Image (tube, rainbow, N blue to C red; front, side, top):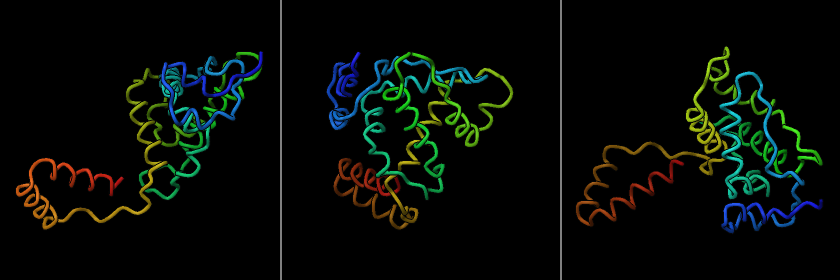
Length: 188
């Protein structure tokens, strides 16, 4: 069967996403999104989390359309040199585009290696692991590898905190919330 445009990825959830529409030129494999992931020892928790993330239409489309390349932050000291984001992007291509004519499971060996280097305790021995812990780590790692803030401002000083508090006291909660949000965005 002919492969479908990626816009159908957004239709799986019943929503149209701008990110998915921006990928309209891509062609999905006949088994797009239907591929399993081989268990590499104690990786079933990782596979479960990766499948969940891979089936969020806007997230998958973000990586499939290459937008992550423009936002890759290899110098973030809280990130992983972009390795997590690049490995996740490669997984998206395997699951959605290069799946092949046969629906055979994908071996996420490289991605497991990247995660093992970043968070070895999840993969040591063969203990059962928690998918929630993996997802929290994975989302944070993607966030830091793709963080748009290239240079963080200095921490807020006590005098700035006092000025912010005075501003909030004079102008109310909406201004206090706006200032807090601005400070958050500055730091990424």
